[in-house]
Length: 468
Image (cartoon, rainbow, N blue to C red; front, side, top):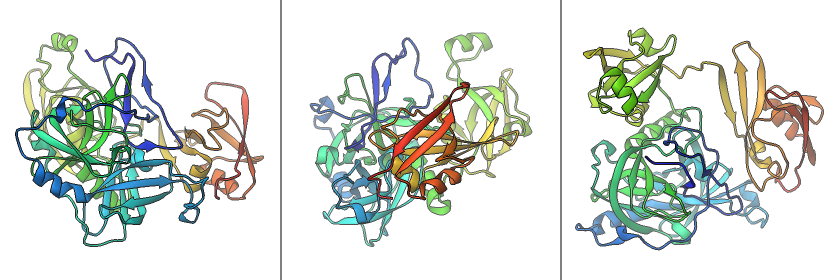
């Protein structure tokens, strides 16, 4: 059993002025999907045994991949402030050029704390980059630079990746541009409890290729030089690389990037079911092998699954002919489709096999609609806001994220704070808050409360030096 005791999951962007730390300390508990809202800093390490010479030649793959991997620098404040020492680079990472006209894929966590981005291509030239869109739930972001005829990587088929096959990782660790390491695929469909967002999707490719600080957003390639994953995180007890690296599969990347480029955001489809892996205990209870499929423990009202006649206790075994034996495998397959797409679902009920055609729907919120806001004005003071519209129509604006070493991070305010007033003005939406910020007061006074607490709280934010 993998336990959470003293384990650190590390996302691999370099956080220079802001270091966010995520330490898992719950005991005797298998890893499951939970939201984590922090990223941790790397320390130096020695190369592991995976650096030994592989039995195949990676020269061609490295020649293809290295020119297409870029370095990304992230700052807060517009480009007019880039020469200001106070506006130092707050995050650095890697990115992969995926088209000759300048589209670049990287991790959401690489760019999430900034609002201006610079890309250095393999020829050492620097380019202003525009954020096309990003998705916190899959940790994917797309940037665009104004340059043509760029070397780029083709996306391979991550479904064809085999455990034990050799791979190489390319990135920019520790300011060492275009570093290539090698390893094997150790596992597929890994969940490591790293991603945030309303619908976190984790089905990582695990490898022992060396990832390091600055590798986030870099390329994981097969021997043919095809992009099979975007490098994202390591799993460690010590804070050093210990042989456990994780990349987002290219098939997920392809879908998310396509949506972001076409719509500006991910078009997320849902079956409308609650699912769980078949544990040994559940296996004995229902009389099926744990590797049979994925157990349905809830059906959402009005969902695609309900309309197709699926029931609690059904076991999903295939999606459009693809065998699914775990929750990550099922979630990965559904993530490849958009709302309105029709999928064929094969499932078991009382040891009998059934097949149904389901028209996938948009996400169904069981309690409220949620909107995350991270406008430039909010980032400048170091917060993200969450708007909630309850089913009874009540509106609320809640502090979703607070970044360290920012005006808000220097206060005692905590995530979950419900803002009722800004500088004496009643607010019920993120737009109301932003409107008050734009008035350019040197100080902001936020008043509000925390859920299930009767006491009111007040926080003073000093806005000097935010650049807005």
